[in-house]
Length: 544
Image (tube, rainbow, N blue to C red):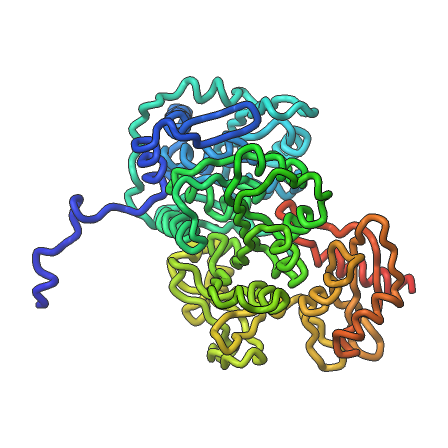
């Protein structure tokens, strides 16, 4: 037997389960008086936030919540939502953050499927929650959050109010690390655009590593001030909920995404970092110049959710914000890759900088593998920037699997890799560039058309605020591109003008055959809902 196998076993002195719960304990110990959470007039230090999380854990335990029970949260980006990310797992339970934009039927499915024992909900969502609870077959303890920063409609529904509930808990509650770092820490449901959503299960180890990966990969300095524009319900805020505790930074909460409020918060609190989908960046780029007056410090932004058009990358540089593109999925704890920048890029023309920066890039620090492969043969594609394959991931930042769905879990892990469903190429420098979702590729007359490529061109038109391109049926070609556009105020380009603009920059078969103007349907995380637009595209064809 190898000498390295004798007397060198795991022991309490040299091995502990990895869990992000240790981050908040450390920050409260070292920086007890540093600001942890800001929300309107409310301020909490790290010592106060840690105590409130322990009170929540204690109160939940006293209410009978224990190991791997599910605690659901229907909350905006508020201190209560942040506290749930620590207080819930501190009592051994699993946090299920709910998408606040979903309807009662979808919420009811999640509460039922996840077997939620407790629901912590903001009174703003009372109508949806009331209707959802009527569809659930088991009893759920409801705890109401009455946020002082919200003065809209909505009445309490539960037996307890949050502040009174945690007041009954012990601020010195003796929580413990999970027995196994593979234990579940959170449950996140996918969007469910085709059938019921799938419940993605995260473990403590992945949450711990994802939080640290975010800090190192993005280059966040200690004590960053982070503005919450990413919903905390989405991949647990891309795991920045736990990252900010490790960073001993400051969480600036924001109930809703509004360009004027974002600039105001950046100016008032000297926000150094924020994350958001491309639509958030568009809001800022197109906001009145006077809203951003007085902001002279460096602001770093990270975007994900959809490939940013090159015009957006250019716009953020002109705004003076440092934009980084990250890519990932719910199944990968949020950001799995990053478009890591090189100093020499700064010497390139702005358009080339934007092209390089708009790619999905390379694996993040704590993600062990990303590859573009043939979905059938599992062969890796050549790094030629032309051969299309499926992006696949492997490593510690991959979900445990789908709750109560072993078949879907097995299918997603075929060949020892997580299959994303995103189609991409690998460029000669090894950086990945998404071409499309497999379901969004338009096949016209046997030719593949990347909807992202067409959208990139449309975003360069001075009248276009937002663009989405989907397939619409065509008798001759099978299907052709159809463009849905949101226009800037005061702009009204004709379809002929837009078509000519595209013809100058695209092969003729890639030019949209239809242009539809109006607001684009979006998810709560800012993603454009292409499945809705595909249905509309069919309707447009039928009308025409």
